[in-house]
Image: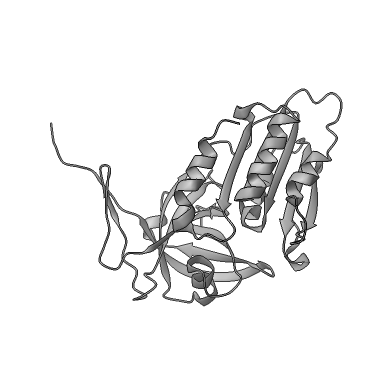
Length: 271
């Protein structure tokens, strides 16, 4: 029996094109030989993306040997993103980036991306399905969650029913999203002076229709907002834990590195 440890390499992808989905949401299309064989049914799933080293601008990718990660000299910047759509026929992958300027690794890369730009990728991963089958669904998220929620809505059965709450900082980020007719979408504009998270307040005010014997929920976005929504879904709507997928993508005032461990604590908490 061989004792050789399996080496896992990230996929190296090439920039193809980009376009704005809304004022602050930029879609980047990628391709490359490494993308061949990417799963076709994982739209909305999590991926880890590696951006060039911020000091040198050089993109070198890590290698996983068993449980060990070997980082290169020019360590890339890892960030979590979502598969917006993969098209096997053209071997193209779309990733939507929230862009508020060039100061962030992901958004900054997307704004400056051009022919010759590259990034690394591992995944996809996460639960499947992202929202459990039910008579009625509740979905909520901020702009960072719009790619995942959009992908989920596209995959839902045409008879799906429920509410979707999407919170943005700028009304110009409101845009058309394909969805089942009976999944009602409500856009909210964040008020920085509001004490309670807007998404949680919107969920709290919902009236679940009579006859909806089963409920499921998907919530993603800023840490405090996700926690508040999750508490309401569990304590007031009595949705079973295994029928809720609540994932905080980010925390106000912290970058990915500072927030990484806290995110896992939040997701592992009993609620």
